[in-house]
Length: 231
Image 1 (cartoon, helix red, strand yellow):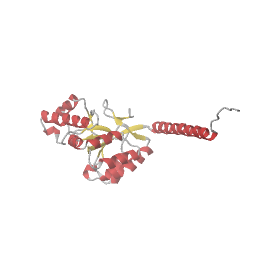
Image 2: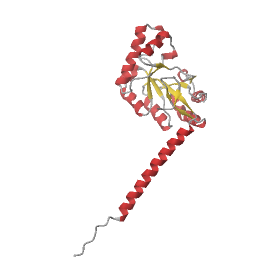
Image 3: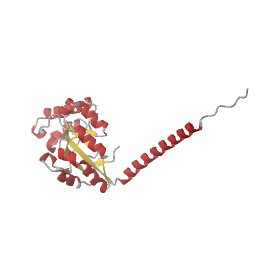
Image 4: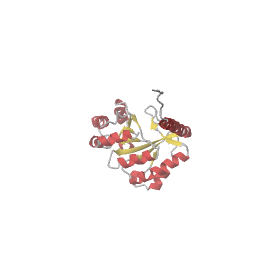
């Protein structure tokens, strides 16, 4: 009997090589796109959203992701404790989670022990919900004093106010919110809110406006309190 060496079918081999080539090309294209985006960033701004997580959080996160934006979510401890899955969703969507007190009081009118409780309970609530231990703290209403600052520092928190107020909390229309974001310059931070429908509607236009000025949405540095390239 004549015997011959087994031969691999040619078509599957060729197909396999083609798939590998396409996968490699896709990886290169993705890396090139990421490099191009990084190269296009002439500066970074901090998009911040207060008062979450809420029923509006999922829609906000979807809008941010769809438009290639990352943001810092300053969560209230009471809502983080009540909605841990939404805190995890923030992290899963690539957002950073900050401390915005537990019940949103006027901290400058409170005793040091109450301030301590508001901040420490929020640290614990966010951590328990899977948001990590916050490094950034935004006092409610942007109100602060030496006592608030010292308590925040005790927990290793950097106090973050804002450079631009979107006025979404005051009923600002979508056009006005977009115009507020257009005033941002490198390193600056804008105040927005998790629950505002007008802010949600503004997200695509904010993204477009930033891209048109070669600005990218960055993280807020705990060291400087300014927006920087994501780590």
